[in-house]
Amino acid sequence: MCYTVSMAPGPYGSSGGALRLSLCGDVMLTRRLMVFDEDRFLGLRSLLQQADAVFANFESTARHYDEGSPGFTEGTHMTTEPELLDDLKWLGVSFVSTANNHSYDFGEGGVLAGIRALDAARIPHAGTGADLGSALAPAYLDTRAGRIALVACTATFGEADRAIARRTDLQGKPGVNALGFETSYQVASDDVEALRRIGRSIGLDAEAARRRAWFYAEGHAADGGYPFLGRRFTDGDAPAVRTSAIPRDLD
Image 1 (spheres, rainbow, N blue to C red):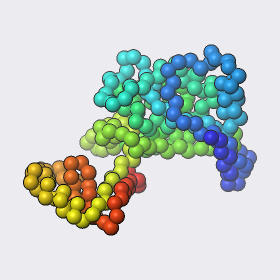
Image 2: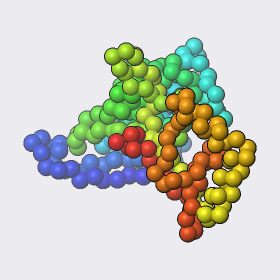
Image 3: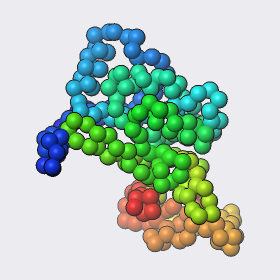
Image 4: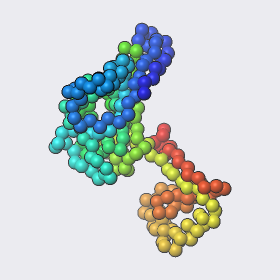
């Protein structure tokens, strides 16, 4: 997709016009691009290079063979040799998000390797970092039509993928800028009560009480719902699924 974004007038000539922005989808680069010369392929490159800036989601980890260790994943461990980033620039991509479900395929070492590779290739990127502050931070791209700031996050991640903030007593943890969310399932009142009876009978309530005593409890939701086997159920007039972002991550 290609969008033209109007820029507010400013003191510089580059900030008073319109910015032409191309938005690409996922990039999973595993081979060279410069060697191909099919007309339609080169036409795509020509189209992208007409824009002032080209964005893509870097759905991979830029790393060498000995950087990072493969983590647990239900899919493919996506990896891109750092030398191929030159081909990405040749195609026209000028800045990327690194926050996605493949960001942590090779653990903390892979996250840091990807940051080093993109920095070396001079491709602005956002969404991962050596700690939460770095993962939250915007990346900046200067173009002839103005400056772009990119903030990136992902709602598809494992809890271990999260970047952790640096503190005076902790170094922080490399990872992704995660946008967590909570989902509740609205069902009839009788159904919620049936789940409560099952939970009591198979020991779920007793287990929850033990966890609260160990300070592992997430607390009781304001909706008064009932947690059952990893899902939260609430009562209502009609069946519904409700999803909301975790306020801390949204802020």
